[in-house]
Amino acid sequence: MITWGISANSHNAALAVFDNDKLLFASDSERFSKIKNDPDLNPALINYALQYGEPDKIIWYERPWLKTLRQLTAGQGFQDNNVKRYLKKYGIDAPIKTISHHKSHAAAGYYTSKFDDACVLVIDAIGEFECFTQWEAQGKDLTKYNDLEYPQSLGLFYSAMTQRCGLKPNEEEYILMGMAALGDPNRLFKQMFNEFISLPNDDYGHPYRLKKNLHRGCKDWMPQFTSQQDLFDIAAATQRIYETIFERILQMAAQSSSSKNLVLMGGCALNCSANPIAYKYFNNVWIMPAPGDNGSSIGAVLAHTKNHIDWQGPYLGYDMGYHASNETIVDYLFENKFCGVARGRAEFGPRALGNRSLLADPRDPKIKTLINDIKQRELFRPFAPAILEEFADQYFKMPTKSTPYMQQIAVCTKSESFPAIVHYDGTSRVQTVSKSDNPEFRKLLELWYDRTGCPMLLNTSLNIKGEPMLNDHQDAERWSKKYGLPVFN
Ligand SMILES: [Fe+2]
Image 1 (cartoon, helix red, strand yellow):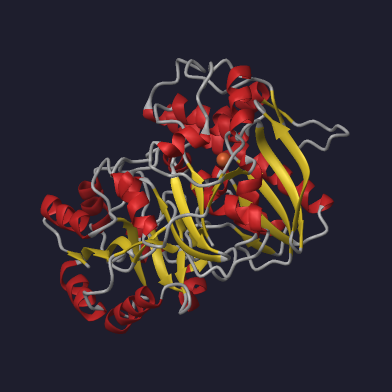
Image 2 (spheres, rainbow, N blue to C red; image 1 turned 45 degrees about the vertical axis):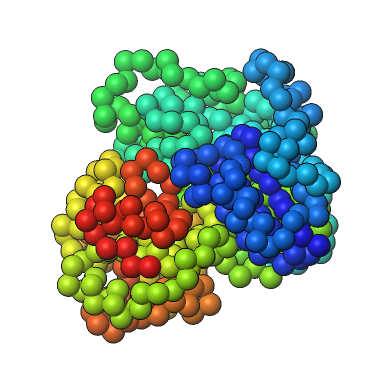
């Protein structure tokens, strides 16, 4: 039985293919269409998915009629959310079942985890109506315990401030998070908090309330704040507020849940600066590597089957095979300091984790500027390290032993030796690489370590400016031509 899980017609469309309980394929639509954050499906993605067979069933990641109702309530007018009609445009005609938006998130997290029980938290901008949910997971069952509905959204608050700082909401929140390290959170924290947030102590057990509906942003908030430093300070206060509320959510969840395992999902689970706080309240934390709406393509199917799957990692996309050897790549890196690597199956989710990566020597003081030039991105943005897992605690104050999907920051204890991978606040978004995470990438890092004594490489996503991460051999060729550097594939 082939089942497709689909998340589309909103933002970051994605498609997942299951054969019964086996996850065969998952990809963001953007990798095939080459349109960054493509909200729609496309024929190239569908053709690739069809190699696994025609779908017998489609599971859609949210309830369309409920979404239409919310859009009308929110004054967004009538929008066509008819799934059958939408899928027909792409030639997909199979029985359709729908799952609620937050349940798809919760299921994507819980049923890919190794936990038999868990407290599941979903924090995002907006589902149909739900913006925050807490679930109690036991065996095969997921039961909702608490929720907050539109417009009580921590994600909308973060997105509104993203827009206030001149960035693209629903897309560039990670840039705001990076900016926060350069600002003074104390300058605006109190004022921003008092204006936007209240912390109720009511019988409902709601962890927070928003005083304003921020669905349409707050572009005019504090208009006199226009300098770069002002924007850094807004970012810092925003991040501090997010962390304050996030900690309260965790505290209340830990008190009310019988489990010491936490599953964290929704777009806010990408806040790697805040995520380490979770370890203060839970013993084990699992964040699926695509915790946003794209991951709900997997979650919709899992909410339907209610079965844990054998999670093998995020390497679920287009397969480029392995042609270039690790020896060739390490030789090149040793001589030339950086290059592209595109091998094996593409990562599902927002991070390049070794299969579509620009790799570089993290010890070289010039490397950060050189790569920022290639990627044409803001100079304040940090790059991440990929490190052999057993060495991580020698270089970083790790919140936990393994962080294979770059979901947590950790303070670098030898920052002067690795200028390219340390942010202004002394932290790095660490990717630990064990033998089971990604065997070929692991071997590449081992070879690099044998050659240099350095157990890590700088690892950033391989993409042409304005485009999504590269997917196939044609993309690799275009990248090489554009930047005059090899992509080993
Ligand atoms: Fe969501």
